[in-house]
Amino acid sequence: MLKASAMYIVIVIALVIGLLCSSLIVAAFFYRIEYQKKFRYDQLDNNLNSGINILLAGNDTSYSSARTISLFNNGADSVTLKRIFWGMYDIGTSVTFIQKDSLYKTFSIAYNIDSTKWAALYLIDEERPVSLSGKTAIIGDVYIPKAGITTAYVDNKAYQGDKRLVIGKKYNSNKTLPLLSEDRLAQFQQLINANHSGDSLLNHIDSLKQSFLLPAKYFNFKKKVQTLSNMNLSGNIILFSDTTINVDSTASLNNIIVFAKSIHIKSGFHGNAQFFAKDTIKADSNCRFTYPSCFGILRFDKPGIVPAQETIYLGNHTILSGILFNYEKIESSLKPMIDLGKGVKITGQVYSQGIIRTKDSVEVDGSVFTSQFLYQNSFTLFQNYLINVTMNSKALSPYYLTGDLTPVAGKKKKVLQWLEIR
Image 1 (cartoon, rainbow, N blue to C red):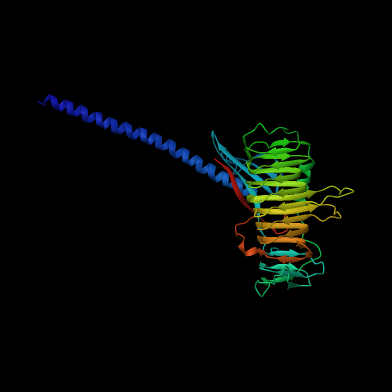
Image 2 (cartoon, one colour; image 1 turned 90 degrees about the horizontal axis):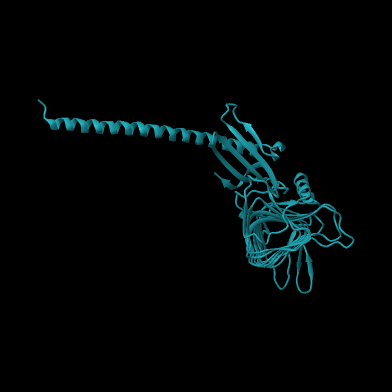
C-alpha cells in the first residue's frame, strides 16, 4: 500500500503542473494579443509612411482639405492626408487608422537646392563692376556684371582677401534677377486678402499651442498696435495686423506666422517664426532666429503718392537661419532695401529686388541675390562695394532646404521638420 504522504506529493505535483499549464496558456494569450497589436502598428506605420510619400511626390491640390483614401483597397489601409500652405513652406499631415488604433505625423515640406541655379552671389548687370575692399571673401560660384570684379581702397583699407577675388566660377549676370515663384506669391496674396475673423485679444494668453491636425488659430488685431510679451505661441497660429506688431524678447514663438504692416522685434529675442510685412521688419541687436525662420516684405498693391521704402533691418550681431526676401509687384521710385548691421550672420538665402546695405563683418553662409549693394561711411555712399563682407555658399549645410518661392528651388520635395508624431 502507498503511504498517505505519497498522495499529498501527487496532489502537489498535479497542482504545479496545472499552474504551469495555465501560465503557458495565459502567456500564449497575451503573446498573441501583443503580436496582433505589433502587427497592426507595423501596418499602420507602413501606411503612414506611404501617405507621407504621396504628399511628397505630387502637387495634387485636392489635398488642400483633408482627404481619406484607401492605399491598397483591402479595407484596412485607410489614410487621411492633407497639405496646407504655410508661408514659405507647406505643412503635410498623414493620419492612418485601423479599428481604434491610429498613428499620425505632421511635418513641414521644403525643396532641395537646384545646383545649376545656385550661387554665392547673383548681382544684376547695371554696367558697373563689383569692388572689394578689406577682408572681403567670396567663396562659391558668382553671377556678376560684365564689367567684372576689382579691388578698391576704402576707409584707409586695401583689399586683404584671396588674390583670386572669387574662389569659384564666374558667370555673366542678366539685367534682371531670376524671378520668384508666381504660384507661391499668389498663395501669399490670397491669404493676405482673405477676410480673417479671428480673435482680437491675445494679452490674456500665457501659452497656446495649436496642432496642425486642427484648423488654424487666427488672431486679427486690425488697427490696434499689439505687443507680444511673456507668452509662448507654437504651431498652427497666424497673426494679422493692419498696423504694427511688436515682439518682445520675453515672447517665445515657434513655427507661427505673423502678417502685419510693420513688425518690430526687440533686442535679445530668440525664436523661430515667419514674419511678413507690407512696409518694415526691424529686428534689434543680438536677436537669434533659428532655422527655418523667414523675413519677407510683400507688397502687391500700387505705391502711394509718397511711397515709403520697404525695409528689412537686422540689428548688430543678429543671427538668422533661413530666408530674407522682399517683393513688390509694382516697382516704386524707392527701391526696397535689406539693411544688415555690423556683425550680422545669415545662414541661408538673401533675395532683394532692390538694395542690400551692409556694414562691417556681415557674413552670409549661403547665397545673395540682389540688384545693388550699398556701403556708406561718414562721407560717401558707395554702390556695389563689398567691404569686410563674407559670402560663402560652401559653408551652407548640404541638408539645407528652401521654399519653392526662391528661384533656386529644385523639384524634389523633402521633409523639412517633423512637427508632431504619434
